[in-house]
Length: 152
Image (cartoon, rainbow, N blue to C red):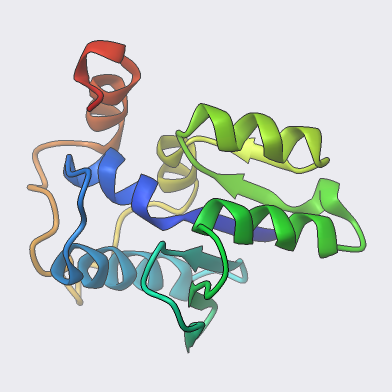
């Protein structure tokens, strides 16, 4: 079951920023790679970015910055190209992308559900650099962003 992650949306949900920096992206990549390292799950993390396809892999996590269109478009292309779209799991809190992904046959889970499913990062590695404080849970962040008044 491939997980297709909406990177900028995850950063916005977890780190409360609409304009993620490279530091925000690096922190998210480190956190996700650490969480997935202990599982058999595979995930592709999509970021919006400048022109020019970029891709790199860290174990079971692939990071892609599509050259044509947005990360949302790239996620939907992946679902459409899948031989079994219903096996694709799109991770986003973006209602528009979630609806389009469901229409294409994919399943959708919230960032909170995804993080809960894959537990905390490993204690030996510690939290990702500049990760949100340990006292605030992903669920707290999710409740914050589910309130329309807190969206920019």
